[in-house]
Amino acid sequence: MRKIAVLCGGVGGARFAQALYASLPDASLNLIVNVGDDFEHLGLKICPDLDTVYYTLTGRNDEARGWGVAGESWHCLESLSALGAESWFQLGDWDLALHLARTEMIRKGARLTEVCAHLVQQSKLKCTLLPVTDDRLRTQIRSKGRVLDFQEYFVRERCAPVCDGVLFAGAETARMTPEVKSLLTGKGIDCLMIAPSNPYLSIAPMLAIPGIREALHNRQFPVIAISPLIGGQAVKGPLVKIMAERGMSPSPVGIAQEYAGLIDGFVCDIADQAKQEELEAMGVQAKFTETLMSKPGVKKTLAETALAFAQGLGAAEIKDPS
Ligand code: FO1
Figure 1: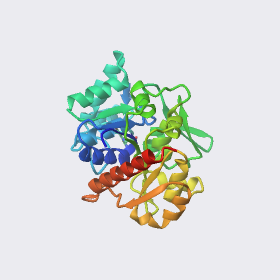
Figure 2: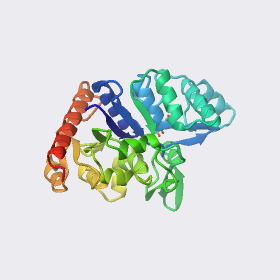
Figure 3: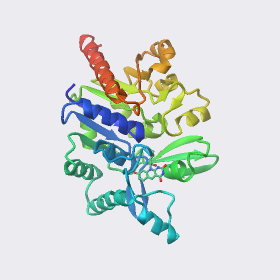
Figure 4: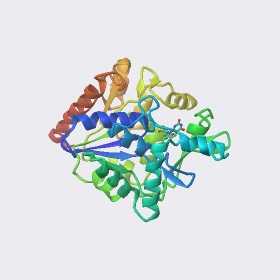
């Protein structure tokens, strides 16, 4: 596979991006990243999902936390706290440099896409890092009559509020960037992968942007998703809680329903092999392998399995263009 696009967000998205990056030739990987988690904090533009991917690919990510820089110091945060300023969102000293540089570039008129291209160039990464949109898109959580901004829900309130609904403020007027549009609507990619990210919080904001869901429906390339669930558990984050709040059991079948009509193949954990028939009855080909990427060796096999699976589906599509 020479050119691959991936929709990703959160820690699962970043780890899968890293797995693919290690398995693909230079310049093959195009990462399309969620910006629904972005927000303005202390006057800075914070882009958590883009930064988690960036730090992970550059080897600087804190593995245990999943976000931020490994070996980080917190002097600025401690000073902010002593000043009585907002300190619930932890910005480390090294991480602050990235927020300062990005905020300044944007203040001078750069697109977020250009900021990302600059970061990639500075760190000599051999892939493309693309925000899904340069426009304002904000994920919000509806909970018992309140509407919480994503980071208020996720960090400040530690995902405790019941999630009655997820809103994507700005989605109707947001536009996918020309770079993303050319990947998703052209004939240039060999496949699109949906990373093992939270479908409701990380992937749905991107699908809410006009034209993206349609591009997947009218795809000229195979699309495969990787399940973020392993035997009824999520590796990180509130996915299982949100599914329960929607009255759903934490099964890859529920995730496949979310992607109905958008995917050709679904890579699931071997712990969920019992769901194969149900998944295939939905018209989705399922492939089972280990998916816990913190386990040694699993990143490589997962990436290779996903790539071979997509290649097989692509070859079948060419044989049967109906
Ligand atoms: N997640 C937390 O749980 N607590 C934090 O204080 C926090 C700070 C933070 C700072 C920069 C950054 O890029 C990410 C940060 N995250 C933090 C992660 C962030 O909330 C992500 O949106 C989630 O991990 C969801 O993907």
